Image (cartoon, rainbow, N blue to C red):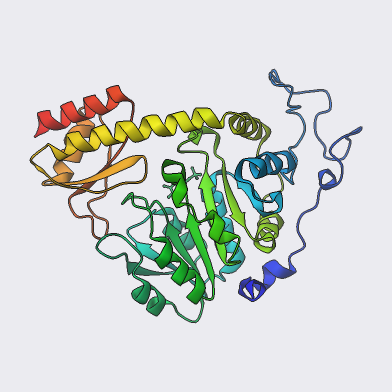
Length: 348
Ligand SMILES: Cc1ncc(COP(=O)(O)O)c(C=O)c1O
């Protein structure tokens, strides 16, 4: 039962309540706001002098229509990074419980565990950066509450095999978080339909990548109602601000624009891969289902620094497990990609 995995203090917690939980309209004299207005122009008539809806109702309704999932399973956070932190706080007792993180992967899972004083157990992904089912299940300890899986995985770029992930989901008696930050670039590989069958899956996603909204900080989770309610219980009351919420509502009405970005980025990615593969000093270009490419090259550190000195900033991943001599480049505009290739060739 999921309930048994939750920290006792969180189960018992009496959440902060505000009058806005029950009333969003009327003569609002409950929250010590400034009834006269805001000091800045409220361009979209959002009533910026008023706190936002703590229940995120409109956002959840509109996202539920886009995903075809009940709004009761949806939660919005200040980036998916906030949701990662909240999940650890719901399930993991500091100094007692542990989280399993296959490597290499997104570094924030480790940081969020460290912040919460929660032990991390690492296990390597296999040679093709897939979950090693046996090693992963063997690494689980008595107090291991969660496993973080990232698909498509950052920084390797590949989606995880559905079959292996589901074996983990079925055999692990804890929460499996599947981070789908990059799923828009390979939509048919989502675990969303599996989530409806297994109560221990939490999917996290973000508006920071394909939707082009990294600057407004918004991510969301899809999970069983019990887990979703716990997220609402422990979040800061008004975590999502009105400017961000308004932008997300606008974005959800423009799914086609996002889809166009995805096709353009995916086709630029294919071109970039072809160009990278033609460079003799590049030993390997990893297959990718995301909006970035990892390639292996001699003297990766030097090349990374020289690119930066020429104004092209990519990411050095060469210290990550299984990624020696690897650099990661995000797919940019056609022009940016050409400048990147040109400068890289100049250096070589
Ligand atoms: C795998 C993965 N998950 C989550 C995030 C963070 O997303 P957000 O901007 O929604 O906090 C990133 C950002 O790079 C990421 O790579």
